[in-house]
Amino acid sequence: MLEEIKHQAELVIQELIEAAKLKKGDLLVIGCSSSEMIGSCIGKNSSLEAAQAAFSGIYPTLKERGILLAVQCCEHLNRALIVEEETAVRFGYEIVNVLPQPKAGGSFATTAWKSFAHPVAVEHVRANAGLDIGGTLIGMHLKEVAVPVRLSINTIGKANILCARTRPKFIGGERAAYVEEYK
Image (tube, rainbow, N blue to C red; front, side, top):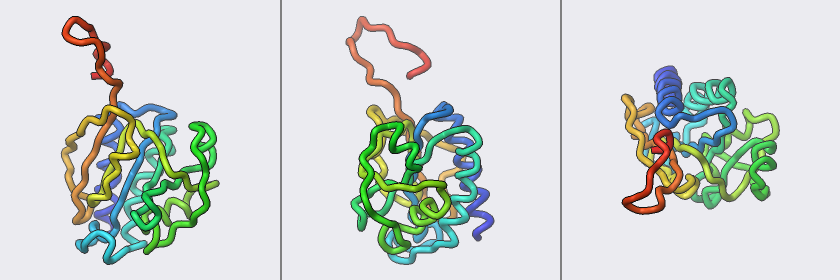
């Protein structure tokens, strides 16, 4: 099952990067329920192994393309996010003091903390796109305007996934013209 989770996560992230037109320096937020990936109810059966499998399918692709990652913690940490310190500084995010654990922050956030070179926690981000694995509610961390992205894969392990990209707001009304690449 862990190899399947890793493989599905790798396919999902590659497809999301293309669909959302992410480029170097863009920020992607991921919320992940390891419990849901293994077939349990969110928050009830945290699996560090499942989180590590998904992370290992996702993170190398993001690093290779220069896409920045923010990993959402669970509600026990008020959905704080784990990012590289360089990301927090670049975007001016205020660093807060918390250390995620599998049952207080989540296994995926714990895995990110242990995998990042210089991890820090922040309370808010405004990401260009997002991946929600297992109903973790990442919408609060996306830029306006969020647009749903449908992928050819809709689960990682046993967890449903939802994806989104963002675009600039359309303003100006019926006589306005818009830039095609942002639609």
